[in-house]
Image (cartoon, rainbow, N blue to C red; front, top):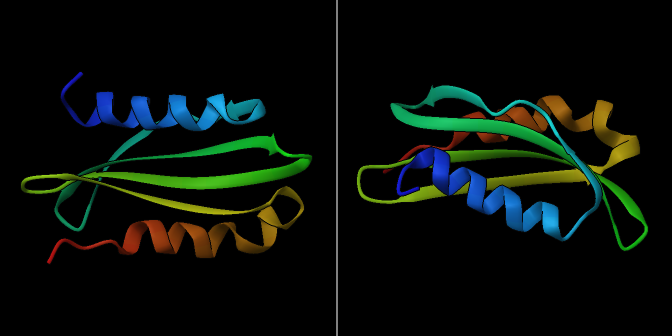
Length: 93
């Protein structure tokens, strides 16, 4: 679909196609710095490495944005708060 949910799903489908055993958390609807936004996390294996992503999708005035943060799964607890801060920091100038 030609909206933020369709955009988010398209990007997530491409990401998950490249992962082995991907699992995704709920896609959370929110607003970030006055932009409609969607946030989710994805775990999976890529080329033998277990990885954890926190991802933001944003609807700007005339375009969509995406921010991907990732770390190795065994570092998830160390970095998930910082990753979330990055996701929530995007502003449209």
